[in-house]
Image (cartoon, rainbow, N blue to C red; front, side, top):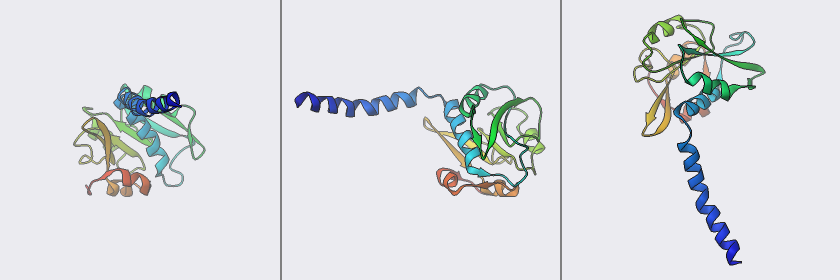
Length: 173
């Protein structure tokens, strides 16, 4: 009986440590890739907005592309496969556009999709002010995100209330 109690106590103490190590071993980009996948699942595009697949584009070559590809491999959203590609120039043919921090042409890429139903996601402090919809930021060591619901509504994207509850909401631009 004593061994059973000690084993149970050891398991209880080890579980939080294992979780903490797993989280510490998860890269910032793995977390952002998971968020991006869930954004696609929790945003509603207008009818006819997509052409048979949900296209996630990354502005310029970036290490997050591999993480996103791993995350969405074999996944579908509402019967549509998810595809990931890097774009080296503005492209209005994306459903989601991720613009990394310190990307020099961010405003140019945002202008290219300005009035189209494209979920724009960035990771720089000025991204929302530039017209982006979702922006990642770090809160200590945790990845968080903010959403501008007005910017999403302007391009006919409907964001799930569940997603809005998790975000820091920011005002109109």
